[in-house]
Length: 478
Image 1 (tube, one colour):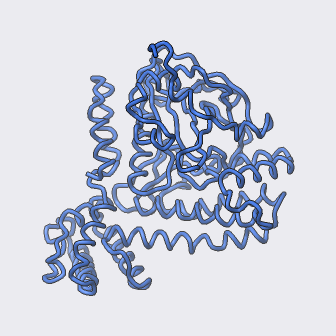
Image 2 (cartoon, one colour):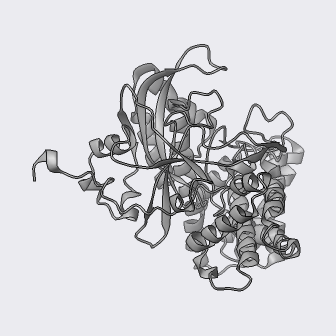
């Protein structure tokens, strides 16, 4: 076969017209922007086997042709949705700088979306340029890979391509570079997709969309007489578990509007996110979140509130009482996952519930009183852990974060409590504790200074190696 006759593996995939089959009431056919340049900066080879592709058989040019020039793929669909943004309803939303590129069946049998970000204007751009800054693309790649490593149910980035344009942003004194990325996740259907249909008073379209969601993303519920109630109850569980995952890893999404809430309970669309440094329930990632509505500590409650607001459009086709019964279990789902994940971060697989709660309470109190870095504490615990602690109680002896009497007393109390728990475990469990500490606590957390450190070489020298090195550390936990 000559090079000219070779088929791009991405264009040869068997795309399923799942969302497209819903019809023109849910999306608009759009065209991708024509970019002056296409430089592949990131390709996620880890994802290719999930869609049946051999990374060695996919060239950089294949990525550029499919996801930089957008050749050979139609239709491209800008999805329609509304949403509550910072508590206020916005009926002027929709895909303003992206589109649904296509949907493919993974090797696991699940349906996945390719969704773009920064691919040009659509009917919902609201006067914007439909572009994505290069830094925005870099940040989303980093967030998705970090969260994935940490066991958070998240979208991933399949590719990021620099596009050769200069973008002006209101908060920047000079133009910034541009990019287009492709997101890989289960679905781009949002809570706001249903809210738009309620706004339009289209009960028929709500039911059609809900049946579609169950068919493709909750197929085990098909045929159940109460499938709508079961769907909502399972969505509650997924979202509660997701919130617990964020909280345990110290992640603040920053913009939990209902148009950023996935109907599959998956984390996606990372803008001004941040991993907090010190433990602080009021930590707020977005500079424009003046009231702290979406601060770190509010995330579980906001997710529960968004689920409650979703009841309004869904009430057109199902009983409010059924949804209220499902939502009532949010806290149970949340705390079950949060407890287990925090227990793992502290090295234990299982403890009685009361002992688990006491250990978590004491640990968070220690972090707050001593003003120690959230990730730094767990990293030190991982790196310094020794089986001898069980015998001699010499726990975190090199800790330097307790400098005043109150802090020293808090650390001593925590050490004694942790030692008591170690003694309760058999000696052979010490090796497993070390393994859990290593798996659940990254050595290099994705804090803001780490992002800025890799961004400077990119802007000043076009040096991408620190970016790739950071990604390698994130993926390995080092």
